[in-house]
Image 1 (cartoon, rainbow, N blue to C red):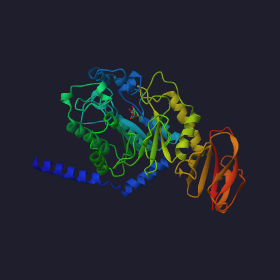
Image 2 (cartoon, rainbow, N blue to C red; image 1 turned 120 degrees about the vertical axis):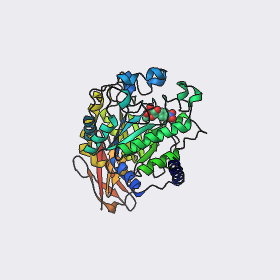
Image 3 (spheres, protein in one colour; image 1 turned 180 degrees about the horizontal axis):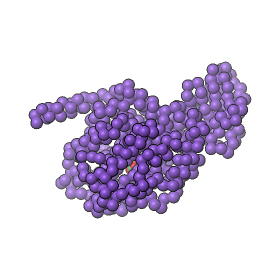
Image 4 (cartoon, rainbow, N blue to C red; image 1 turned 180 degrees about the vertical axis):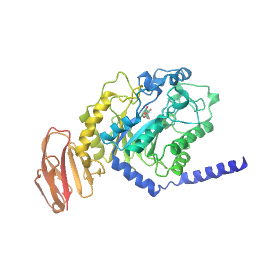
Length: 431
Ligand code: JFZ
C-alpha cells in the first residue's frame, strides 16, 4: 500500500514536471511529419445515439433523462458492422487514418474498459470490442488509428456540470472532479495500451467550462506522451495550441476562414500541423433525415484547398445503427478515391505551396515540384515568386502539354486555361 502510494506520488511529480516543459520527442516530431504527409483522414461519429437517427447531441437536444438514455445500449446490436469493410473503403478513398469516437459526450465507451460498465462490451448484447476490431483492421491495412475522446460527460454524476451539461442536471452533491479525472486517465491509459500505436488523441468538450476551471490538461497530456510519445494530441477547444498539444484543430472551416465561428481565435502562424474537420452532410452522428450531402466534387475541392492551406482534412461519416456506412458516404468515398488515385501525388506528402490561397485556387509543393490547383474554369495569368531561370518546366498534369511562361530574376508569369474539371493541375518542376 505504502509502496504504491509512493509510486503514485512519484509518478504525479514526474508528470507535473514534464507537463510544465513539453518537449516533443524525435518520434513525435516524425509523427507530425507523417501526419502532414497523410493529408486526409476519416472521422467516425458512432455510438448508441446512432440508433435515434438524430445526431450525437440527441440526448441534449431532446433533453433525454440520463437513466432513460442508459437503456439504449441494451438494444444496440450493429449486426452489419465489419471493421475491415470500413477500413478498406477509407483506404480506397486515399485516407491515411481514421479518427473514431471512443467515447462522446453521452459518456458511452465504444471500447473494452474496466473503468465503467457503460461500454460496448458490458452494456450491449453485441459484446464486441468495436475499437479493438477497428484497430486490428487498421493494422492490417496500414492505416493509422486516432481516438476522439470527450472531456464532457452527460452520463456520470461525478462530472462537474458546465454550460452545456447543466441542461442535463444531476445532483450537484455527487460531483467529484478528482474521481472523474482519475476515470478519464484510466480510460486514456487503456486506449493507449490495448490497441497498439495510437496516431492521435482528439479531445473535445473542454469548452463546457469557460474560464476559471482547471481541467489539469498538462498532466493528462504528459500521461499520454509518457505512454506513447509519438501520439499526437489535439483539442477542439477553438483557441490556439496549448502547452503539451501537438496539432491545431479547426471545425467546419478551413484554417483562417471563419465562416462557422469556430476558428476565430486560432493561431495558424505556429508550426504545429493543422487539421480541419468537416461533415459530409450537416450532422456528425447518423441522421436519418439529413440528406444535405455535399457533392463529391465539392468534397474533393475541400481536400485540395486544405492541402493548399497546409492542413489535413478530417472528413466525417456517421455510420448507421446497423454498422454500415450510409450509401451516400460510400458513393462519395469512391469518387474521392478515383480522384486521389489519379491526382494524389499533387496533395499527399506535400506542404502548403508558393502562394497563400488565391481566388482561383491553391498551391502545394513537394521538394522541387510545385503544383497549382486551379479550381475555377477560365484563362488567367498567374505570377509566381520564382526566378525564371530556376524553372525547368511547366506542364498541365493531365495532358502533359507545356505551359508557356515569361519572367525575370524575381518572378515567373504563366498563362493558364482551366477547364470545368474539379481541379486543373499545373506542375512546375524546378532545376
Ligand atoms: C464538437 C462536438 O460537440 C460535436 O458533437 C462533434 O463531435 C464535433 C466534431 O465537435 O463540436 C463543438 C465543439 C465546440 C463548440 C461547439 C461544437 N463550441 O465551442 O461552441
